[in-house]
Each structure stands twice: as C-alpha cells, then as structure tokens.
Figure 1 (cartoon, rainbow, N blue to C red):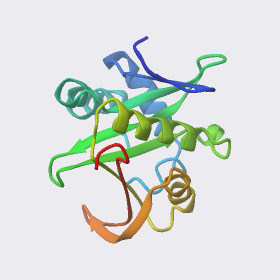
Figure 2: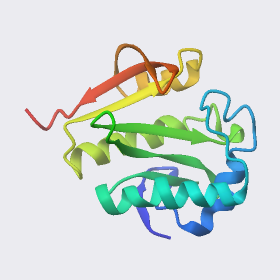
Figure 3: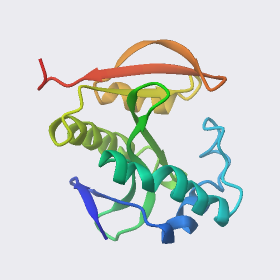
Figure 4: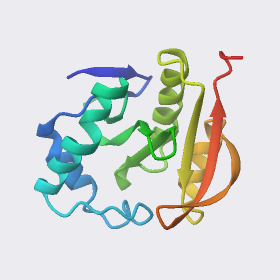
Length: 171
C-alpha cells in the first residue's frame, strides 16, 4: 500500500489497476453518482478509468485521485484527491465516498488534507473545487475547507458551483 497522506482517521493511497472492483462497487449506488454524470458500467470500464484517467496523473503530475481508507480497519470508503485538468489549466479537488461514510466528516478531512498536500508538498498556486448546485453536501465540504465561492459555470454541459483557494505560502 503506497500511502500518500495520513490523517487522524484516514489513509489516502495511490490506486492500482487491481482496485477496479473498488471503483466499480463505489459507483454502483445511484445516490453516490447522482451528481457526477459518470457511471461506471462494469469492472472493465473501471479498469479503463484507472488506466486512462487516474493512474497517468500520478506519473505526469505527482498527484491524482487517491483511494481513501479508514485507518482503524483499512476499510475502503471512497476516493479523494487532486487532478490536473489541462482543458482548464487548473488543479481540481474532487472526492466521492460510499453512502455509509457520509455525514462523518471523512470527505472534509480528506479534502482538507489534499489541499494541504497540494500547497505544501506540490507548491500549487491555486486549487479549484466544483459541485453541482443541488449537491449541498459537496458544496459544504468545499466551504469547510476554506474554499471561496467564485460563481456558477457550465462545465462539460453540467451546471457547477465553482470554488477556489490560493496557496497562502506563495505571495
């Protein structure tokens, strides 16, 4: 297990191709994917997402979406991390958690740790976060992490509330 970030309750580690069943299972719950518009159709599709989207970010940018586990028992509860989006020339904070992990502060804990990692370790100047306007829980996570709402946009034909945070360590 290649752990990148440790918090009080969580471990964030790099995904491997063998994690396709975890990605697939996470996305089976329609409530989890209600606002994401990217259902995973099969374990093969999950492998394709890992191979083409998630794993290349580790090599190209030294960051990406990381698997999130509860430290106590190593239960997989979702993912969180940073993703460089070349089409917008920005680094995006994203997260997705199993419904059983909602309402426990895990998303905020993981997201805040990723922001801290991005600013301190990677020396990123700015991190952006987006959520559908109707996804109040996700918007709250971004706000709890200190991100500032900068407006609504349409991203890939979907409405999005956009938040940003600048690195306080870079003038």
